[in-house]
Amino acid sequence: MPRTSSKKGSRNSTASYSSSTMDLFRAASGKIASKELERIDQLFYSYANNSDTIEPEGIESLCSDLEVDHTDVRILMLAWKMQAKKQGYFTREEWRRGLKAMKVDTISKIKKALPELEKEVRRPSNLVDFYSYAFRYCLTEEKQKSIDIESICILLDLVLGLDFRPQVDALVLYLKMQNDYKVINLDQWMGFYRFCNEISFPDFSNYDPELAWPLVLDNFVDWMRAKEG
Image 1 (tube, rainbow, N blue to C red):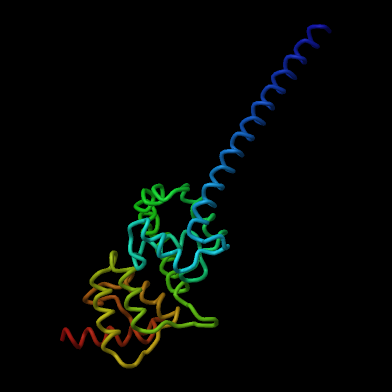
Image 2 (image 1 turned 90 degrees about the vertical axis):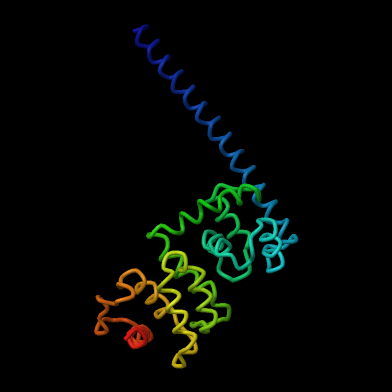
């Protein structure tokens, strides 16, 4: 009986030690996370001027510190990572979400993380989400559902130009010279992405106008064939 009691005591002692170690680990991890969040917030308020939102002027300062232009696609990628809802504005919640996901809390760390963010966005599983987000992010007015042709051309070049340069150049040229469409909606916008991914270019050998393509793309293909023919 004494031996059994001794073994139980040993097991209890080991369990108590393990529990204490885990508690210390959790406490240390909590302090590290708290310090990281504190630094993230400090960086936020250096651009937010003590409000709960970084406004366009603060975004300009952020771009200057990152040494990128405010029209650079990487700023749009940052907004995507934060899931920012309003163009030209970052709330503290959005800022925290993005920087924590990127594991950064200083300007120098954000700079170093940008190439990896670009790679993340360019993965096929993320690119379609980023492409859709870019359209929604540019809806600046309440209940706005479409974007003017000039802005669409700029956005197409920004988000798809690197991956589908020939298709984007041709689409932009067509959109600028045609007179049937003054604006583009989300369905048409997503059709452009699907078109670039699925259709053989520039011969359009697998393009079937009987399928559910936006009419603007039927017209684009007809225009391209007439131009080439």
